[in-house]
Length: 219
Image (cartoon, rainbow, N blue to C red):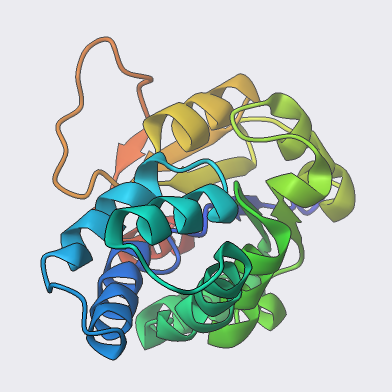
């Protein structure tokens, strides 16, 4: 019997690591250090989800809070300190190790800036737990575009198909729609959100990435 190589692609933010918690902690420290109104924490959290670049993000809160720092200084502050607030849960790390021990090939596919995403990955020690990392800025293509999934598959020397491949993530638009378009089975991490009829329909829902890993390990 020919051995079948199973593989899984994982999103990074709010999938393998808790971006919301890290952003909250970073914002709290940033606001305290600069003695800004504590209400600014919520502003920073919202702004992070609407700005398209870190420069735009820094420009926004520099202007809003009339900070003396230059935009360049603020960008450096964010990019150098924010990744330090990320953590990798032991259950997730151990689960990834277990999958690889069982012969799974694993890769991270994440949308974002190369330096920032790599800093998060290296800070929490994820790079040595997977077989490849694919960041949209580096690849020049973003999820849900099939091309970034194809590059990950080519790197792992596997074919995109539902029989052996999975995509795990929290974004219906990027991860689930992208995984479906790439011909993969999918696991969605809803984070308390409801799945609507019009949404891309995942194959499975899990409350956490640790649960998703357990599901894969049980196949």
